[in-house]
Structure formats: C-alpha cells, structure tokens
Amino acid sequence: MNRRRKRRRNTGTVAITIIVLAFLVVMSIQIYRLKLKDSEYAAREQELKQEFEEETQRATEIDNLEEYMKSSEYIEDVAKSKLGLTYKNEIIFKEKDE
Image 1 (cartoon, one colour):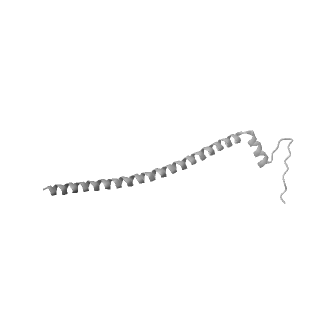
Image 2 (cartoon, rainbow, N blue to C red):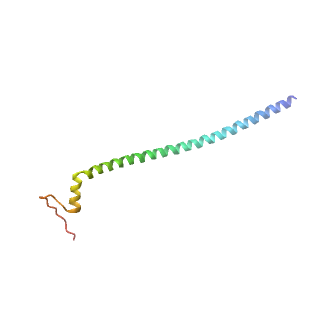
Image 3 (cartoon, rainbow, N blue to C red):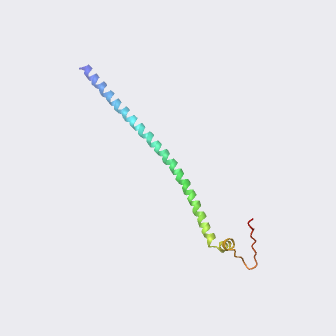
C-alpha cells in the first residue's frame, strides 16, 4: 500500500506541475502580446501627437491669414496685382512679354 500512495502522490505532483507550467506558458504568451500592443499604441500615440501639433500650427496660420485678409493691406495688394488699380500718384510698370 505504501507504493500505491507514493505513485498517487507522484502522479498528483506531476499533474500539478504540468498544469502550472501550462499556465505559465499561456500567461507568458499573453504578456508578450500585451507588450506588443502597448508598443503599437505608444507609436500611434506619438504619431497622433505629431499630427495634432501640425494641425495646431496650420490652424494658427489660417487664423493669421484670416486676419490679413480682413486688413486694408490685403485689399490694396489684391487691387494692385489683380485689378491694376493704384493710388492717385502711384505708377505701376509692367514688363512686356517678348
């Protein structure tokens, strides 16, 4: 009877060891996958931060352009370049196309 108890004890120990090892393998795989996802998310976060900075800069440029377009300086520039209008004492010389 002593031998049977030892076999049962050894069999139980081996079974528990196998279960624990299988659990460790599964958990290791899951941890590896989570680390990969984390690195992907970190890269995506950096990319989105860069896009945010670019869009913020672009919005600032658009605001500046809007202010310029509301100014009288813009109106004068358009009148001179596109319409050929000038002040009373100004003369604009245009080059001839050869």
